[in-house]
Length: 382
Image (cartoon, rainbow, N blue to C red; front, side, top):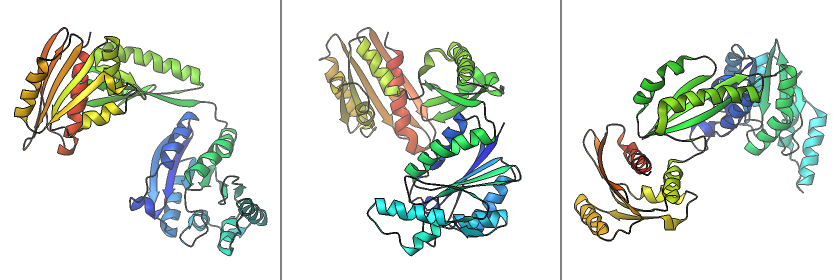
C-alpha cells in the first residue's frame, strides 16, 4: 500500500513551547485514506536539517508531508529547504503574490514586503492556494514521490488537507482502500495479563491487534486495512467479538468511553448513590467524576489526611448509610519501592475488601489507584 511520512517543522516544537497537534490530525487523515504511516519527525527551523529530513523521508515513503515554516519571516525556511532537498531553486509566483495581497485586503490589512517571500515556492512545484490564511502550500512530484508542504497553523493545515490534499492524493495514487481502528478499554488487569489472554491475536497481520498500557488500564487497538469502510468494519467487528470472549468483564468500554462514566452508569442503573472516602489521592476522584456526564448528586467524595482518620470516617459513614448507598474507602499508601492500595466497598448486596500494589513510576500511582478503585466498584455492581 501507499506509504507516507510526516515532518513537523518548528524550533518551538523541539523546545516544548507548543504541542504538535498537526501530526495527530494528519495521521488520522492518512489512516482513513488507506495510507500507511511508518514514521513522523520533528525538525527545528534549520535549512540543512529540514532538507536532510526530506531526503531521508523520500527514500522510504511515497508521500512526504511537512507542516510549518511557510510564514513570511527569516526563520521560516521550509520553501528553501524543500528546494534544496530536490536540487532546485525557489521561484516567484506573481499569482500567489496577488492572492496574498487580496487576502490581506479582506482582513483590512496591508501586505508587507516580507509577505512577498510567501509567493516563492520551489521551481516546478504545484502551488496550492490557501483561502483561509496567507501562507500558500505547494506540492512537488518527483520520481514517483510526492512532497507536500502545508502551513503550520492547524486550522489552515486541516482545511487544505481536507479540501485539496486528500482529493489530490486519492486521484494521484488511485487510492481505493481505507485503514480503520477501534480501541477496547480494559481495566483492573495489567498489560502482561492481557497479553497472556490474547497474545496469539497480536501476531495477526490484518486486522492487527496491539496493546497500549496506562496506569490501571490497558487499551487494545484493532486496526483493519480493507477496500471499503464496510469491509473494514466487518473485520474489526469479528475481531472485537473474539476479544470480548477472551477479555470478558475486564472490558469497560470502547473508543471515547471513560471508566468513570462506565462505573457511574452502572450505579445509576441500580439507582445507587456513591460515597467515597479517600486518603492520599489528592482529590483525583473529584476531578475524574466531575468530568462525567452524571449529575453530582449521584456521588459525594470525602477526603482525609491520614489512614486513621479515613478509618474513623469510614466507620462513621457506615452507621449513616441508606439502603441504596454504596460506600468506598480508598487508601493509597506510599512506599520506597511499591505503593499499596487498600479498598473497602460496602454495597446494598454485600461487602468486599481488596489490596493492590503498584511498583511503577510514583507519579503514576494516583491515576493507577483511581482506575483500580473505579474498576473495583464497577465489577461489584450487579
